[in-house]
Length: 184
Image (cartoon, rainbow, N blue to C red; front, side):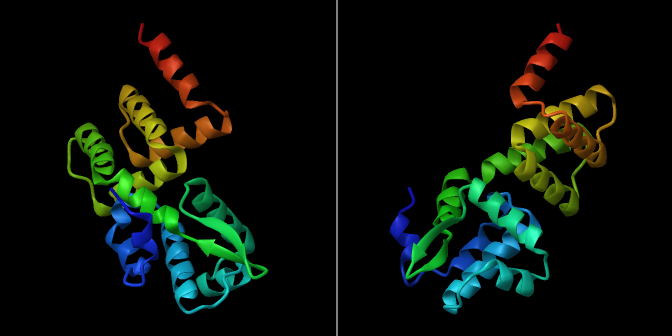
């Protein structure tokens, strides 16, 4: 059981903790880098803003906004007002990282290794975790099932399936119902 006070203790090094648990957090590269930059800025007592994140990370304002929104949606980033300034809080990283754990990620990777009948490269593993973070594990597994049904188990193909479903605005439940009806 995690203790919210652990994250706020003076002995807790947030950046080191994030790096040590990166594989269980299911973050994109930009999300991870953004969290680490926020931690650096907080520790250095430099006010965090969209402008400074854009400058330090060499990203556009739109990329910064999307990344911060995604981190907030995942419950890893919260915003509060302190002394008239927005404060970026990352307590949610610790809460999620200690509750999600590695077994979930390993089971997703194992599903892909079983389907591909080989060990995945580290790049493939990261890509699968990125897809899971972007689309959700259930949808990624459904896309893997579809790729297998069409005898095309390939990460590029699976990502195209996921993008197509997103463009068509199909819910996970719609996809599950479709699979049940097709397989009867």
